[in-house]
Length: 153
Image 1 (cartoon, rainbow, N blue to C red):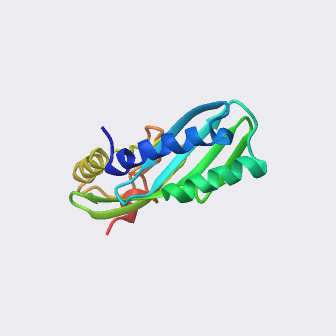
Image 2 (cartoon, rainbow, N blue to C red; image 1 turned 90 degrees about the vertical axis):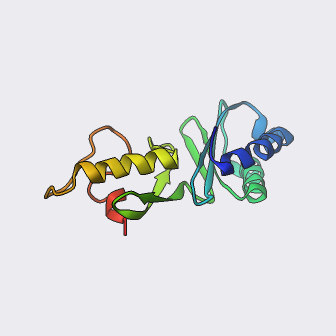
């Protein structure tokens, strides 16, 4: 189960990686982050050095073909093709539309419906309280001051 964008990308992504020796050589894992806005970020990690012309050219071609951003990682190397964040827009009960960025590699709640419900609960649980709310669960701080709830209408 996943977002429609995730389902749409899975087959073409697997085919694109398989078709490129540069992208599949010593590939360790692939992670996808998609949002309700249709943004998508693919992180590919390797058990070999990456960077330089050949890998970047192949990754750029894949990113353009799929309409995604790509982040490549190998030991002590991070190569960003396009972007390393995706935009999420949620309708939060009791607060309206919230817009925030999810960053590659960060701990987030990628399920839009669950995230919306969590934020709605936080709004309801803190209704009538003065001051700031601090999130203490080591996530992306979406409910804390300066983050997601501050970005709502």
